[in-house]
Image 1 (cartoon, one colour):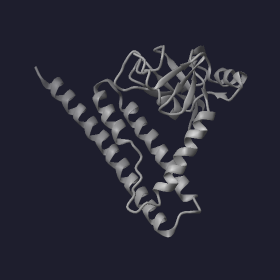
Image 2 (tube, rainbow, N blue to C red; image 1 turned 90 degrees about the vertical axis):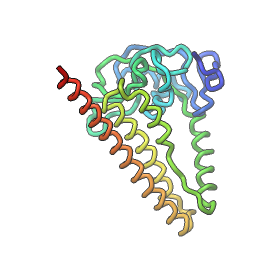
Image 3 (spheres, rainbow, N blue to C red; image 1 turned 180 degrees about the vertical axis):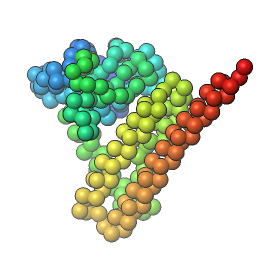
Image 4 (cartoon, rainbow, N blue to C red; image 1 turned 120 degrees about the horizontal axis):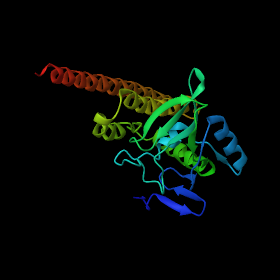
Length: 234
């Protein structure tokens, strides 16, 4: 079912009110990653292949087949523009029929494509940066990256997910946290007290990531124990 409060149909495109991104209404493909990049370039008018972080925003972990409330979302593999670090031949994708399964594969494989327009995103990012700038100067403010909510949603699907799926979501949240930290550290307007608070925020996010990884290890150990118990039963 389409979330009409979030997604607004605009002819050949769909506007996402939650992220400020404008998406192609119709998917294209399948095609290789390089053809997908050329396809986006030919569209012009600001269209581009989405990053993996942008593509994941279309995932709804409370849904399956498709795992999204986007209008007419097919249950296919969709390319992102994000290459795998250290491997120029692989790129990240999202599979919308497997609870938003995130993984990577060789760029010569054929997947589907839904391009995104960045003009609205740029404006949304500017508003978010202004909000951060004001908030960081408020006494007692602590800025936190909202990973916990995502992890709670993921736990509900744990039996249907691999450790790679779960760990990748941690990595995605952590990448967002690192981007925010980098922005804090390059803001020349921060006062000494603000810089101290930013350091405390960074320490908090390090601790939250460690806790999340420890939770993954605990859950994997529990799954292993249950499998061993089941195998030992006559």
